[in-house]
Length: 196
Image (tube, rainbow, N blue to C red; front, side, top):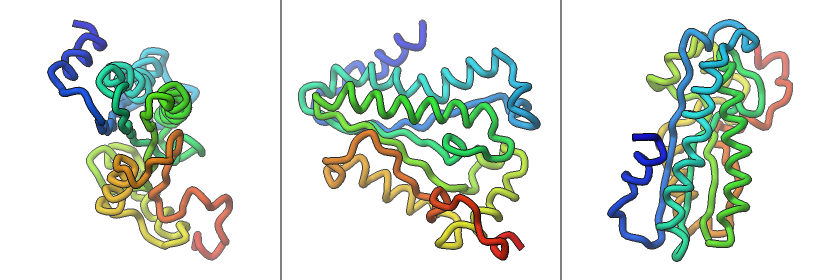
C-alpha cells in the first residue's frame, strides 16, 4: 500500500465536520546530521523532505474532504533551523524550510474552505529527538543565554500555543509560523556578554 493510500485509510470513518489536525513528523539519517550539509546524500535528502515536509501536504490532502464543509485547523511543528543555520541540523533545516513554505501555500489553497494552516516553531526542548542531534547541549545553553526571556521553553508553553492555534481563539490566523522559543528567533547578533 502506498503512503497516500495509508493516509486515506487513516481518515476513513472519521465523521466530517470541523476538524483539528496536528502533525509533527521529522526524520533524517542521524549520521548525516553531523558534519557539513554539502555531504548530504541524495537518498537522505529525498527521504528527509518526504517525511519532514511532504507528509504534512499529504495529510492536508487526505483531511481536506472531511474538513471542506465546516473548516478546521491544521498544525505542524517546525524549528528555527528552517530560518537560520543551526549546528548539526543540516538537511533538516532545508526540510523545515520546505515545510514552512508549504504551510503558506496550503493556507492559501485551503483558506476559502475556512481551513487554517499554521506552524509552531518551538525552541530547544530536551526530548529524545533533540538528544539525537550532536551538540544538543551547546544549543540548549546558547538558547538559554541569548533568548530574551533567558530560558528554554517548557512543554506546557508549547502545548498552550498548540491549543491556541487549533482552537477558535486563533480564528483569524493562518499561514503563520508561531514561535515558542522565549524570543530566540528575534535575536540577530547577541551582546558579547551573553556569550561569556
